[in-house]
Amino acid sequence: MRGLMGHFAVMPLLEVLELLLRRELTGTLTCERGTVRKTIYVERGLALGAASNDPREYLGQLLMNFGHLTEEQLTKAFSTQEETHVRLGKVLTLAGVVTPEVVKQVLALKIRETLLDALVWDSGVFQVDAAPPPPREELDAAVPLAEVIREADFRATAWRAFRSVFPSGTLSLEVDEQKTARAGELERRLVQLARERRTIDEIGLALHATDFHLYQRLYALHRQGLLRPARAEDAAPAAGTSPTPEPRVASDLVKDGRAHLAAGRAARAEEAAVRALSQDPQDPLARALLAEATEALAADLRPRFLDPPRTPSLKVRAQDLALMRLPAAEKYLLSRCDGTRDLRQIVQLAPIPELEILKAMQKFVEGRIVSLA
Image (cartoon, rainbow, N blue to C red; front, top):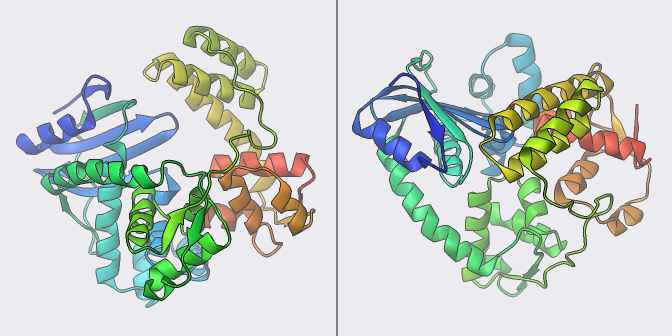
């Protein structure tokens, strides 16, 4: 079906998948919301591959999340991949780090997660074109669209149960120490992070976990009596944030963003585009501004931090850092600034988009929290 496109507010992704399945179409499905872009390759009722710029849906992140891979092993695999230009899954199997069967299973999971995450979007755009899927390779997976559609119905019910217990990612958790012996290997680290009074969002970053699988584990441990929500953290804004501005018309925000972009203020332009999209998620002018602003901002920050890659180290004491009110993603990144990893390695390993990492590093350096070598 060449040229099918639309907005999720008008035609939800579930209906798009049902159409692709019913007509056994072959092509490429692209979904976009803000800066997130997902591509799924379909052929006669099967999803044969998926690409996403959400790092949590990368193969390496998923392998770490499910305990198949360590950060050190992934770092070595990336180094080999840069030298050989061989796909990551092949590098890992040739090195004997994981088996081909595991790679296939996790690639199938990657396809499912990429689609299932997009299925809960209530805004964004999609496009289906007739471009055929790329040539298949030995380790590639295939997932029936019918299974994804059935899974989406189950997840809608599951999310209601999860949120009834854990309504916010800002919650920290309490551990029942008398019952922790029941926890399996994958859950033990989660329990340890809960002991450290990490929030749910912080635990998800530390485990490189997608939202659904994190909350699924939390809910199972709660049902077993091992975990329960602690008192929600104070809702005061994190350090460095400002009060939420009054809503403005999207067209005015786009106009302001264009002026900032023309003046070389890419960060201000990006902020204006994000605010415009919050007013009108379907505005094509706001989407175009966001794409141009993020490209300009990345072009400014990459040479400063990644070319060559700089190595960050903390300039403040750990006890002082603990007193700062920072978002979960920034806390995670600061835990990586120990002088042993350069920023290219941090970008490869972190479940956070590259641009967000670079923006955070700029903030840390300007705030004299981090120094760069």
